[in-house]
Image (cartoon, rainbow, N blue to C red; front, top):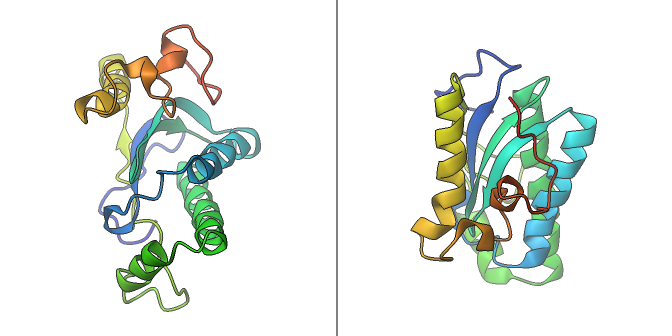
Length: 177
């Protein structure tokens, strides 16, 4: 995934990853843009054997605890597909201001593309213990609460918090690691 100092050493283990929209632009403020992310994760769960342990999607970034046969390949596919689809949505909806910003903030070495949607890298952190897994899942679920968006974790629709409270969420979640 580009110029990241973070490396995948144990590709078959769960990782905590963060994907951030370029320059922290608020792309996930419409349900259609979030649905692109949800649909892509569902596809990768089937195609790439992606195991999703926890997730949260906020207005300009998302956190995941994931595992797959090849995590680097899965995240690369995720970012490529969602970038293409998000740009298509922005163009269709004529969201010129954000499109102009995605063009302006694009990294200079991205010569083959007109726009850049995602920041480079995804900061993978290997989940090494049960305590670390629980800590990362709690961090993910508390993110919207800490930001003041909701009072309870289960109130944030775009999170796996509901799954951990016995309710049905938007994506299939693995609860055993």
